[in-house]
Image 1: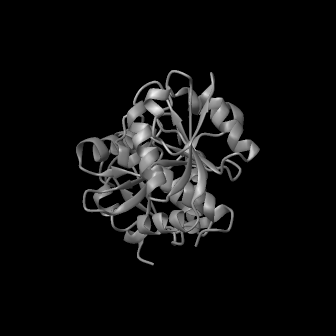
Image 2: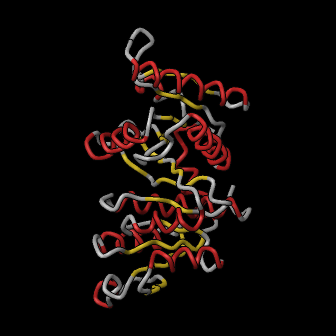
Length: 281
């Protein structure tokens, strides 16, 4: 399969066997979240459960939504309880506040994410780290690489990794040289594990089109790449799956993301849950 058909593959899997997906409804962006849930359900991408508190899930806002509604004073914990107990097959953060990520980290112990992005020219790629405190060392990044490769393979593609650093080979200075050293160490770790990886230095434009997993030098630069692409550069985000969660399907979203990002994240969660249950491709 051609890598550029990735999201067609995701939606096909999701529609073939739509899974039960919970999406968080926070006190902000309620209407956006509900619209995304209705659209995903209407398009047959998933069976939707909206999870929120009493104020967020008021009858007025939820009226006409043909989905399951769960109200809770601690909705972020309730959604993870539903996941752990098998009441739903996967979760999407939706418009939950950062409290959701903290509860998930306390419960499961890890918090590596990898964002599925798409350039304005429709080239999809996974990017990590995207959290400002994630992937701080080569071994931590290697865990993300392994999880990302498993994700790409589950979707039916062969992983190819690009590792970025803070400059070209000829650039000097302690910060740049440390960044380059870390990148080369990560490339070596990946190759020893049989993972195709290349050091593209600071040339992200060369990595695009060549790789399907791109490792930023650190979480700050990864977060800036994400924000610049999605909010300024005409690109799109399709959600950020949590990695190394013991098989649990958890997909992060930006609270300020558009409806399309929420719908894509629901489709991705449904597809991954379907693959996990052997109902996908």
